[in-house]
Length: 562
Image (cartoon, rainbow, N blue to C red; front, top):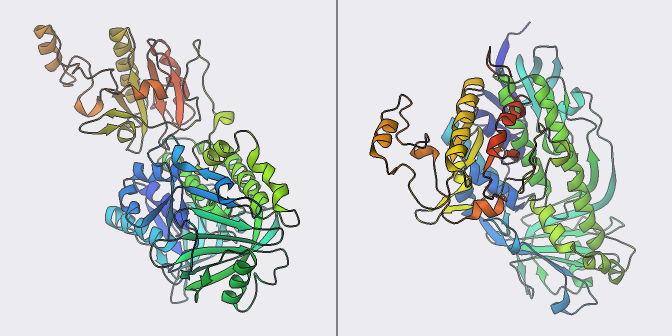
């Protein structure tokens, strides 16, 4: 029998696998990342990065690098043929409550390169290309993987866990015996190509369609444009001469552009599939291996990466013995409904632009429903994705305003100069406890300190606590010099009378955190998860409930059970 290699085997080095590797490595979990492709992709494929993903990348420390290889897109224009240009429906993302109030257009090959460079520079990890998983089995303590090397020889190793980030035809999903039911909904072709005679705004994503044809056009970074095309017969989608077929559709829709020779082109069947489950024992699936859907709205890659962002911190805790294996059940419980939401949202756009057999004027009503634009941009951007319905929170006496457990934790500008944002406070791999005192400052500070200390005792190094006082007063400047001196010389060495040192205290000078988290004179304790979702929020007087909340995620150290 082969010996156990204490590591997580990740199968597939696309965006999902790269994000998962990052989230495990930043928590000191050893990773092996294999990919059967011959080398890094040189084609674009997916090409949209939405706001919630950019918030994730800012948290990971690579948003600035992605911004260098992207183009901003304000949103989508739906070109109904019977409407004048001024009346065309739009989904304008510039109103989103985030620093990334737009979405990015990016070449996926450039995007993946940024992720690979970051993994190599930070963790010295590179994907193992031309390395294919050809056999997989498991027992109670490990998985046995048969892996074919580039020279054709097969190596057998046992790993602690395996995660299939290996796409629609996932080998891991098949080996785990997980069903992947679904249906084909249309055929689609796409190409990257240079265009001439363009007479529409290339900053936007432009949807053109009639009763039987669909085309989507937008400018990519560099020379090329991305154009998608669909029609119900498949004759044009699968035509031998792709350029001629695309030109035919563009001409019939009256777009007016001239299509050059494509850099690359492909065609495929659009499917809606979602796995029956996301885990079988020590085998898990993530990203396209667990759900696929229409590309309408460009949510696919984003949803897949968020799957990995959700799974990474949980798998790390289980791997290191900090959490029970049952914690991994929350991955499917939280992310499968999101996969279903993505499918639903994608199909809503699909029905508008690819509702073949229905006249466009009869599809217009979808865009005229009250709140259609706001719902669409919140859903597609990922900002409205949440785990409210499955969040487990201990009962409290006082209900509080603001984001609920399982909802996205909003960002907020705390200090204007030098700039400090709330998301800067969250930029680490642990839970974050925010202590926001209200009118009763001394009492709320005392409750926050006591909770911080008890969390550190029960769950060492799993929670970072930060004090967020109101205003711009330095709380260490206490009027009583004797008290200040005693605090400075305290055994904790915290250096001031708040009990929170410089790295764990930032004033809210703007009031944004009060507004975005619904905080009043009652004050607040807010526990934010490593994946930027609210875990729990309560008044300082009910701090003990937070200890109960964390019991679902981590094992308390011996002798510290509640």
